[in-house]
Image 1 (spheres, rainbow, N blue to C red):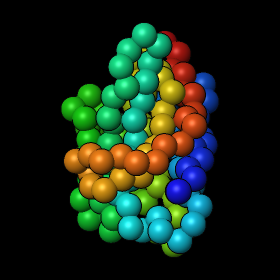
Image 2: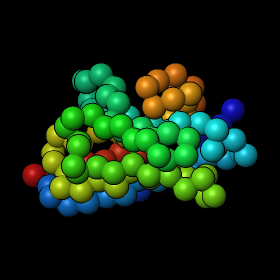
Image 3: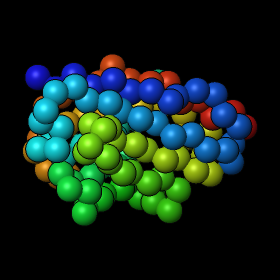
Image 4: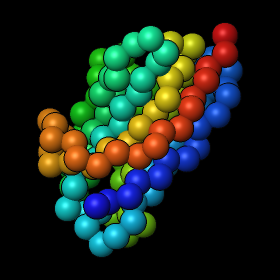
Length: 119
């Protein structure tokens, strides 16, 4: 088990920024790829970003490229999602996940944090 706890969500105006954090417990954080997902009301869950074990490889969905940045600090067992130039369509519950690779195999999930972008 890798308990994951997200934080940093909130209400922000369009064009603003937020930084989400996902803290993991245990000693195995650095052995997992980490991902960020989001789910808006009435929509399917969407894979937003992912980062490899060492942080050397990242992956983004097209709609957030150039606006969102995923990073990780293995010494702090934490992965981050810096979100800039936020748009109302970014409104969703954001989840972090731990898995095998940036391509998939997500095993452990956090409880989510709400991000609301007002127009």
